[in-house]
Image (cartoon, rainbow, N blue to C red; front, side, top):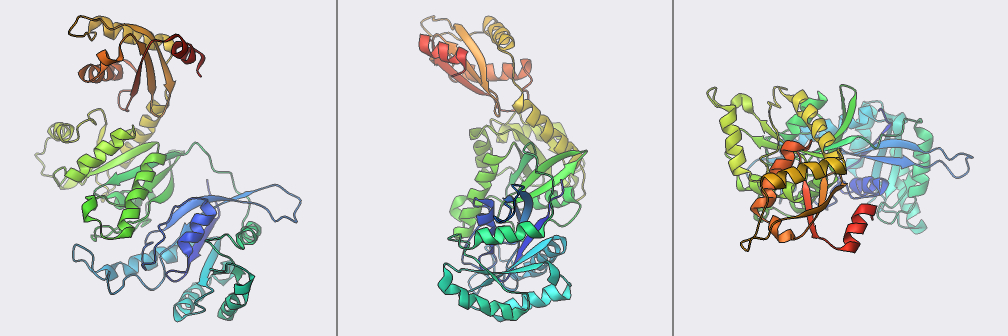
Length: 468
């Protein structure tokens, strides 16, 4: 699927991220007054409506790309990160991402601040555009124009030689309809994006290799990779196609203990990561094979279980471990340390060397198929009755468990509802035993299963049978 790309560029704090969120209809980019919050290229799909005067209902899909603010990546207060690394070293990477976004774009939205007026950094961005001979792709947008009274102030931007600015307010929505229509006329019709694209969230501790994996899949420097911890802030969506199968990989901020968060930006990045997990079909849990499993890894494992997410344990940097390391022994170690994820498959990779990538993607598609499988009621009854007959729970008073009805009521995750005589009989150890046996007998061997026990009642049983 190839969509027109609209790159959003400009100096810091002119509202680029707010504009992306406005077009997307949801919060994607982190918005903060601190310069340099956006570093990677953050993307989102949006549907553009045709101009009102045209006799057509054809909408056009585009991919918006938010870029880092040009020219300012540090402040006096944030020159050095918590690990003592100079953040200014990211300058060439960020500017490289901005330049790459503009080169690929069908349309470039050059954003200026109508309230601040034209400043030297705006002229620097203009020089960059002219140096790359991209003037014909530019629409200049004067942001923070809340009403008509601010439009005369916005006209100062016409002096930059990029045309008459389109006046908008990303916050209030003023002028956004007109900008959408202008974009519609500048892009060609493209195939509507498939809703069936698999969403894969890549999560893990800082410097586990998440961005390196994205770049290895893309075959280019799509995300900034740096030894500076916390380089990635937003959840960055990148679209791929492998063996004819499209999917979206979401690179997320590296996780660390919440008490170590350094400011609002890291707090927002953490919640972007949680949201990426929620909207994903499969999670790639990146683990650095050269380090011991940390408390942060364990907390993340608990979060994945809480959300019932199909998970691939991606053991990265395997090329750096000692040659005599036993993979099976390492797998047993992970099972002990990441309790509750013993069913999750493990893939050994080296993102830096590009090894094991196809295995990771193939496994992700496999897990999505398992999570979307729906088993017949007849097969479920047969399997569970057999398990109960072989080993069923009982109370200290000798009460025997009875199964009255069972049905799979949902997928993603596979959710099985069981109507029994006493749900308390199935709590604790027996529920874990039943879960493991179901993975052995049903095609859910590597994904989480949700079991719902309820006591028999005529109304509840009737609702289950009718699907209400």
